[in-house]
Image (cartoon, rainbow, N blue to C red; front, side):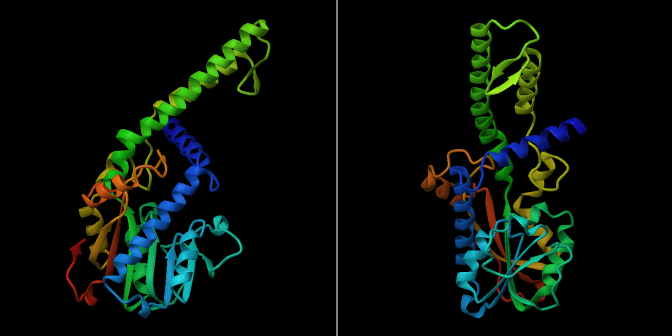
Length: 304
C-alpha cells in the first residue's frame, strides 16, 4: 500500500509539472477557473444584489487569479490559503496565511465567502464550514465550487487512459531511440549509452522503463481527502454535498453546473460548446453551491 501511495504521489507530481502556468494546459486551467468564477458570480447575482457585498474572503486562493478578478468587482477582498507561497506577486489583495479549519478573523467579518475546488481538500470539512459560518455577517452568503461525481468518473474512464496513451506513445518512441543508439554505437554490455538525452547503462535504462510503465497502469489516485477513488465518487454526489452543508448549519439556495473537463486537461480549449451543453444536462465536472446560514433562509432552494 505504501508503494502504491508513493507511486500515485509521483504520478500526480508529474501531472502538475505537465501543466505549468505558462503552458497551453496551464492557460486552460486558468481559463476554467475564470469561467467558474464568472458563472458563480452570475448565479450569486440572481440571489443577492452584488452592490450590497463589500467584504469578500476567498478560501484557498492558490495562485491568486480569482482573487484578482474579485478585486475588480468588490471593494474589499482578502485572499487566504494554508500556503501563500504560490500567490503571484505583486499582491493585488491583502493576503492571509491560515487554515480554513481555523480562520484568523473575528466573527461577522465578511459579506461573501467563496471557495473554488478547495472544500474537497480539507480534512475536517464540517469544522471548516462552521468556521466560515462564524466569520460570515448576518445576511451574508457563501459560494462553494466543488467537484461532482463526473469529475472522477470522466477522468477515470476516459481522460486518464487517453493521457496514459499519449505517455505510452512517448515511452515507446524513447525506447526505439535507445535501441537505435545501442545498435549504432555497438556498445558492449555494462557501458553507458544515451537514452533520451541521458547517459544510462542498458540495465538501468530498462529498469526505468519498467517503472514508468507500471506507473502508467496504476489506478487513478484520489483528488481530495477520501481514502480511495470509490469513496471519493460517493462523496462527490450532489446529495453528499448537500448533506455536508446541512450538517454544517447551512442551507442551499441554488446551484449552477459549471463545465465538463478532466483533471488531466485533455484537449484544452476544444469542444467548449459541447462541454457547456453537457454541463446543462448535468454532466459536469464542477458545480457551484450558493448557501446561507440555515436560520436566515428566506427563499427556497432551486436548481438552475
